Image (cartoon, rainbow, N blue to C red; front, side, top):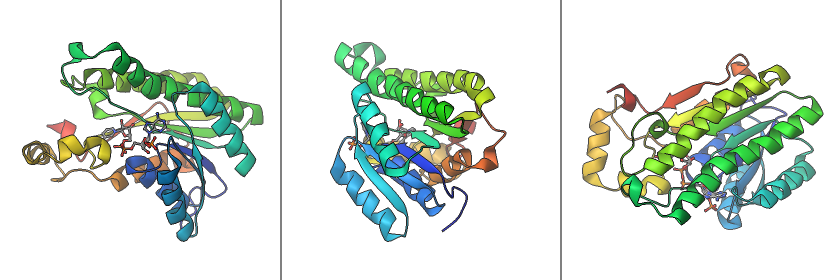
Length: 253
Ligand SMILES: NC(=O)c1ccc[n+]([C@@H]2O[C@H](COP(=O)([O-])OP(=O)(O)OC[C@H]3O[C@@H](n4cnc5c(N)ncnc54)[C@H](OP(=O)(O)O)[C@@H]3O)[C@@H](O)[C@H]2O)c1
């Protein structure tokens, strides 16, 4: 066990699998008490059991990140469990439409923005409000994507929401810097998770990605966790408004 997040309480959304589960596990290894958030309790419970099995402290709380009432309920339960929150990792996102941008329907558009933009923003409003009430320092880590910084055929609206996440990261970093709340983003490249299985599972596509990636492989959830711990910890005390690209060098080509 490390100590880099000792005495800190972290909320991690989308923590039942993939990148969120890896971040939650690594934060717990570094001494944080971790609030695990996603819609379904089963996946959260499994991650909580694993963290506790490794002597960590985790509390699963089901919550749809796009629903304001559920977000408030989740924060209330988190405060009941641990008394405070210091770190928020906004990671739960969705992409219901894979296809040319103009072919998206209203429902898929609304769902993508509801979870990926309003969900992230609403979580920050709650946690930043709590931190300001406590007059405490805090760190917010938004999981964006490399597609938020480039053209992204077939994932256009999802990419727009990630560009919005990068924009909110920069503005909020400026607006909250004075009260000691840092806001940073991580832009992952392709990471092997359920979310990306259509892409990673396609041999031809996978080879195309690997050939362009300096690191010579597809990313794994754990590759993102170290960056998240650094951004959450006091080691990055003078870093805010940054977008940390973790893509094995894919965007260099
Ligand atoms: N994988 C990649 O290649 C890649 C690349 C760049 C960026 N990203 C970003 O990384 C983040 C995590 O992606 P991932 O690949 O780890 O995905 P994943 O394996 O599919 O996990 C998604 C997580 O989000 C939760 N979730 C989904 N909708 C939710 C909602 N409305 N409210 C609360 N929780 C919700 C899921 O649990 P429930 O089903 O229980 O809700 C699950 O825990 C996302 O922000 C994604 O955009 C991924």
